[in-house]
Length: 383
Ligand SMILES: C[S@@+](CC[C@H](N)C(=O)[O-])C[C@H]1O[C@@H](n2cnc3c(N)ncnc32)[C@H](O)[C@@H]1O
Ligand code: SF4
Image 1 (tube, rainbow, N blue to C red):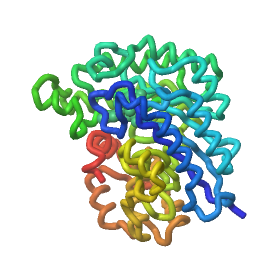
Image 2: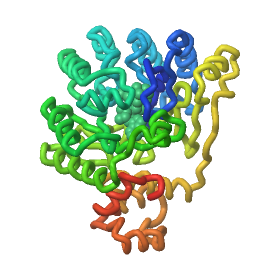
Image 3: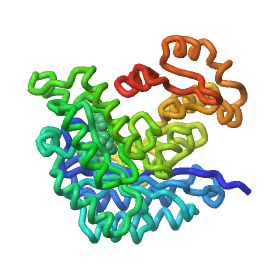
Image 4: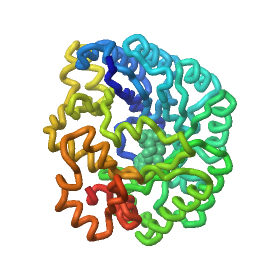
């Protein structure tokens, strides 16, 4: 019998300090809650039962994200992983990632991650320039990143991602080039480059409103994006999603599965899940999440967002798939759903093709360069 393939996401919502641009659910100065949080997380994994029979599923990817998973004791990470192995059949080739922040990592932590089966490290750097790191409220400098990176290699990690950001206030195009060249010289297998998004309620948003900082002009941000694409492609990285680049065969399986609308279960406060056409998430509050496990009312943690109809599922598949540089394969759409997307979305596609934002290239519907440009800057309004 074919097993149902799923991904698992684990959310660790603790950070040493909140970065000025970040609106992911994570809290600083809450370290005393970590032991109870881990206990609740383990209970959640143990008790999870919405997949009818655990032995009919195969876990293809695990992603431990945050927040800052490397902030908590690595014995806790080992415990969490052990619980997953106890409960699920994890594919022996599963991609298992942990996000780590420079300034929070030790040799012992990395060794424990390795022992727990983690085989991919994602390091948040953002820039190699210390004045920009400081301006973003990061807790580390570039040298601490290099130490973390070297330590991860020494411990034997052969799949490392580095996160960078462009379009930052006071960032010059030369600095973007410099950051890229520095990182390329370290030869990570994967590089994510995100254009800064100004989120509601962040410190950076307030600084902008108060006129304390200024964003680069849109034209400059565009130049930064295309420079990034050109430099990384010249150096053997494949541009496979709007913000993601990888050496051949090192594309992030976990993220690709999300863009391919595969199913995943999220554990932890604010973690999102997508199972059986239902999108839901856990309550975005460490305190409430724990309280509901301690008071044995775990169902109160769940917030249902969407029970998709077949039509909604198809539409979402199109929107998620367009983030990939290769776009959507018409054949794969036909295999997954009934009907040809070119006819189903005839009027929408016609307009986007006429505006030169999308193209139909053989079997694939994908973004043009103009579409990519637009999607990178304003994905929300694109979709
Ligand atoms: C979920 S965060 C967590 C990673 C890790 N805690 C860290 O900061 O190093 C993953 C990445 O998203 C990116 N990111 C977070 N907020 C962003 C924003 N407002 N605009 C663009 N990129 C952002 C950063 O590059 C960050 O490394
Ligand atoms: S360390 Fe990462 S998750 Fe935490 S606030 Fe900074 S960007 Fe957000």
